[in-house]
Length: 351
Image 1 (cartoon, helix red, strand yellow):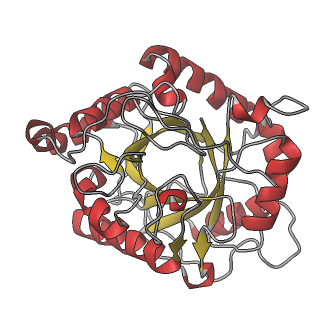
Image 2 (tube, rainbow, N blue to C red):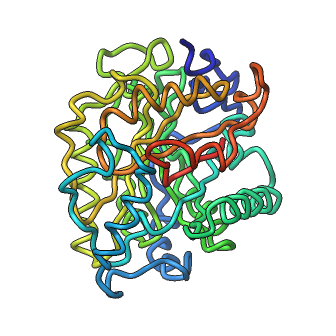
């Protein structure tokens, strides 16, 4: 069973591609830019006027219970909705809204729709997807999002031999400014390669302190065996997910923020081990995100085998504008198709 397209090395910097697409642009190997990092806090208050505040009304627990039962979509397996999950802090996005996200990197036209088109055209395309979801499920408001790859696994080891490039802060600032035009939230995605989440995540703290910035982590490119990224599928353990969740939770508490969303990419069983040990917290909402590409039946099978039977909290589903069309019936799944799944995904990503 094939879940992703084959390894491609970009000619310019050798960026790895499997689920995320190829990257032919040039990226920086530095994690920060002094001027930009200093400015981000000042700009943060205006980046997303629609962002919820943790000083808003507490979560309506009865409404929360109704919504997670609704998302279970009649499941009788006992897996969904997830039992004994904590109620989130005030200002939680999930499960009250469905996140519709565009994924990619501004340096590349091949890593996803976010960088493939000029910003205004890309935002108009995102608007159309938002409208489709609003029509398909009018009882669930839509939260638009941009999901930006901030640390990119690549085919060259670099000076430190870690096989990853950290994007400059100025590019992250550009994504924030683009997102503000639609009051969209922003996800910063990390592909650690031969580095690790403990080394990469803290470098993004200035951005994650903003109320409208959330996190994605990609086990596919977490190469714990030391293998070159792209030669095999990587893995995270529950301990890695818990580290990221705890890091976010501390930021939420220290900065009086609404809950953060943490998306974890997955399309095989071994990509995330010991899921039963993943801790749930009021400060963080975890989405296990089905990240495979292919024809509809293959994608539904991936969701059924690797997302459904290992419930964590919420689920996501990825759609590929190009790769999902490669095999018959040569069509992408629609919002109506995804709303038939058990459970219904509450985070939808387009690449």
